[in-house]
Length: 111
Image (cartoon, rainbow, N blue to C red; front, side, top):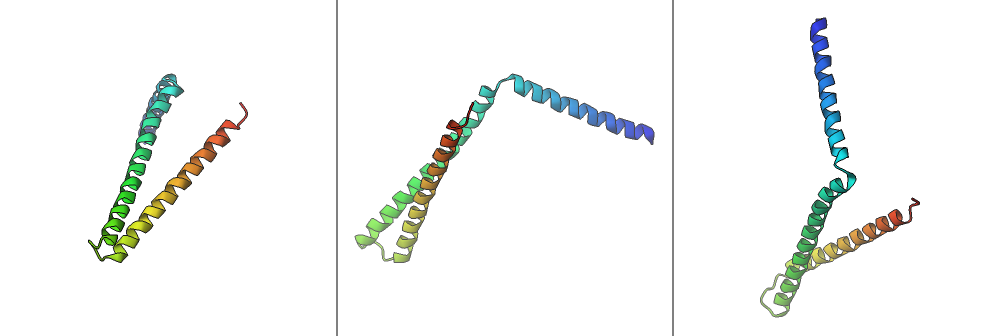
C-alpha cells in the first residue's frame, strides 16, 4: 500500500513539474506576446457586439418606416424593436463609459 501512495505522489510531482515548465515557457515568451493574443479576441467580441446593436437599430428603423407607410399594422412589434434598439444604445453607452473610466484609472496610477 505504501508503494501505491508513493507512485501517486510521484505522478502528482511530475504533473506539477510539467505545469511549472509550461508556465516558465509562457513567461519567457514575454508579456507583449500574451497581450497580443488577448487583444484580437476582445476586439473581435466588441466588434461583433457593436455590429449586432447596429443591426437591431437598422431593423427598428425599417419597422418604424414600414409602420408609418402603412405596410404593417403591428404596433407592438414596432415598439418592441424600438425598445430593443434603445436598450442596445444605452448598453453601448454604458460600456463606453466603463472602458473610459478604466482607462483613466490606469493612466492615473503611479508608476
